[in-house]
Image (cartoon, rainbow, N blue to C red; front, top):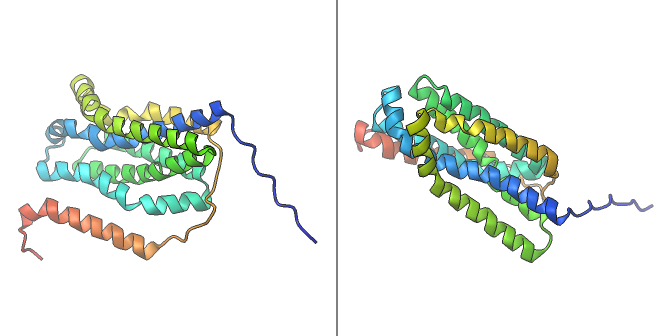
Length: 236
């Protein structure tokens, strides 16, 4: 006896597809912006938290190391549990970590919050692109959408120093992180309204040992470069 497969979901309208692209691009804009926006505010952060160059380096690298280290596992989780679900989780984690960064009383708290922020960002970067590709069935339209997505990410990297300088001059270094809250709130509303749920065609196994090895390698490499001048390059 044959069984009927569930009907394929109806394709989205052109307006809805490009709205989904705009929502995903907004999430990617935050990821790129927070990669560079902090750089201009580092002197103010150093004065506010009484830390040296080594501590400032950890503020920047804790975000990027965790972001890079979790990209693969975040993509696998999205394929398994749903891309919209993981994307929304990433927005929430990113937003809460941004608030923790803004309220951080010490360097250690700020570095830890930046690492959590990087974990949230890792759920936005690959998942946003997968969502965009999934809602664009036409190859030409998909190519244009990927071009727009990449351009937005490049723009966010360039806008970071300009935005950071303006915020620090007007409101202080903590505003570099407060500014994320309203954008995250808007993105969550738009995701709930416009972005459909989707899964990967093939569920990838999560390689936990490989993920731990990759994270350890990245952390140790960056840690040696930051701490080496202080503890000595020959120090065990």
